[in-house]
Length: 65
Image (cartoon, rainbow, N blue to C red; front, side, top):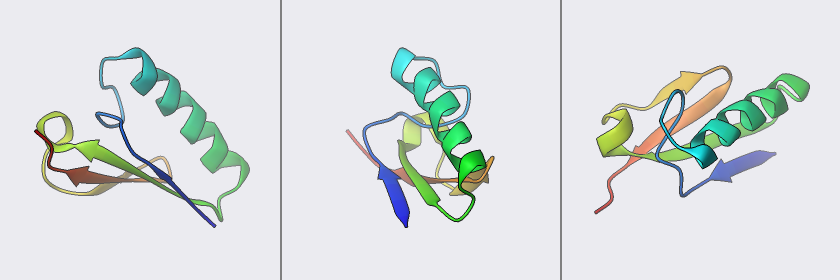
């Protein structure tokens, strides 16, 4: 199964209430079910242009205005 998250600036350590909450929540979900693929689509001004994995979570940069 796959969980795709949109609307965040990115992970980890991006300033913001939703980002901080999401960082803790998705990390715990990934630890509970390692077979679940979690993908966060973050904004390139905050996370750069290269995709990466963080604590079992795949972070994909997406260009936005």
